[in-house]
Image 1 (cartoon, each protein chain N blue to C red):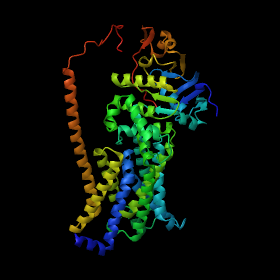
Image 2 (image 1 turned 135 degrees about the vertical axis):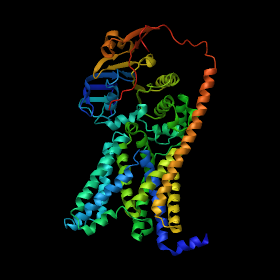
Image 3 (image 1 turned 120 degrees about the horizontal axis):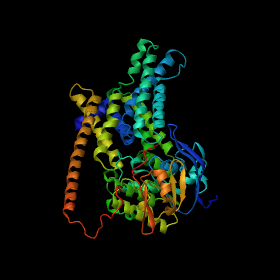
Image 4 (image 1 turned 120 degrees about the vertical axis):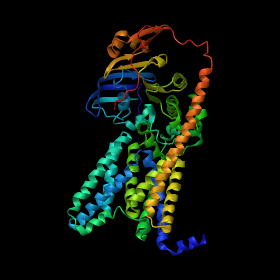
Length: 315
Length: 268
C-alpha cells in the first residue's frame, strides 16, 4: 500500500491521471446521468464527433488566414452547442425519440463538414483534427487538468442547483410548463451544459473514455437503483472504479487504460441488466401468486355484475 | 388585476396540428365559474388540443382562448399560476427512478422557485393528497413500477397537493381499472365540494362523472353543444358526433350515453 502511494507521489503524470479520473467521474454523474434520464445516451457520441467538425472548421479558418485567432477548440465548442440546440429544438415537446433523431442528423452534418474541410487543410495538419478524439488519460498535461477541473466544477454546480428542474423536464415536460416552470429554459440549459462538458472532456481524455464513462455507468445505475440521488452516486462510483481499474491494469500489462475502463463500464451495464431481470422475475412470480389466490375466493354475492342492456352495445 | 366570473372562454378559436390539419375551428363558448366542466367528444375531436391551447402549450392559429379572463398567449404566466394540470398518463416518462412521493411533491415544488426544497408542509400535503386516492401506503414505491391505474391516481394526487384555483385533467380515467376510476372520481368530487376550486376534465366517457359535472362542452373539431350533462345527452346531438351507434339510456333520473368510442386521443 505504502509503495503505491509512494509511486503516486513521485509520478506527476499518474497524479494527473488520477485527478483526471475523478473529474471525468464527476462529469459522468452530473451530466451522463441526466442524459440517460432524458433518453439521450447517444448524445455523447454525437457531440464528440460534431466537435470534430468544429475543430476542422477552426483549423481551416486559422490555416486559410480568414480568422487567424480562431482556435480549433472554439470551433469544437461551437459545434457542440449547435448539436445541443438542434436536439433541444426537436425535443421541445418533450419526446425523447425525436431528440435522438436530431442528434443523429446534426452529428452526420458536422462530420460531413469535417471531412469536407479536410480537403482544404494542409495534409500535415489533418492528424491534429483526429487527435481531438484520441486523447489519453495518461497523457494529460497541466493545462488539460485545469480545463477539465473548471468544466467539472461548473457542471457540478449547475447540476447541484438545477437537478430537480432537469429531472422534472425529463419526467413531464408538459406538466412542468403548465405548472408555470420555465421548462424550455432548463431543457436548453441542460443540453448545452452537457454538450460543452462532453466536448471539453473529450478534448482532455479522448472520445472512447468519454463515451464509455458517460453512458454505461448511468445506464447501469438507472436499471438497478431506485432514486435519482442513488443513481447520481452510483454513476460516480462505477465510473471512478472502472477508470482506476483501467489505470491500474495499464501498469500491470500492455493495455490502454481507456479501453479497460470502457470494457468494465460496459460490463457493469450487462450485470445491472441481469440483476434487474432477476428482480422482475421475483416480482412477477409474487404477483401471479397473489392473483391466483384471489381467483380461488368465491365471488361476493351482493355484487350485481350486470343488468339487461340493449343488445349490440358492448359497453 | 381583475378576475371576471367567466372561467373559460373562447372566441373564434382555430388551432392547427403541426402538419397543417385543422384540429379546431370556429370555437366559441363562454362558461361561468366556479364550475366542474367536462370536455367530451370522440377520438380526434380536439379535446386535448383545446385545453393545451388554453394553457398556452399550443398556439392558436386564429382567435383567442382564455381562462379566468387571462389570454392564453399574452397572460400565460397568470394562467399557469392558477392551474394544476394532469397530463395524459403516457406523457410521463418512466425512465427516471422517481418515487411516488417525488411525483406528488412535483406538484408543489413546480410552483416554487429554485432550489425548490420540499418543506415539511409540502411533504405533509403530499401525503394527505396520496391518502385521498388511497395510495399513501405505496409512497416509497418507484412510480414506474405501479400499474396504470395506480399511476393515474398518483398524478391526480400531484394535482390535489398543488396550489391553484383550477384543476385541469386530460383523460384521467382512460385505461384505468374500475377501482382507480371510482377513487379518482370520488376524490375529485370531494375536493371540488370542499374547496373553492374549479375543475376542467377532458374525457371520452362522461358517464363516470355524469353526476358531478355542471357544464359539458361537446366537441367535434368545433363546439357541437354546451350545457348541463342531461341537456347534452340528446340523442340527435350525440348521434351527430358519435354516429348512429350512439344511444342514450335513462337511469335513476339521469341520462347516460352509450357509444362505441374508447381510448385516448393520440394527436399532437
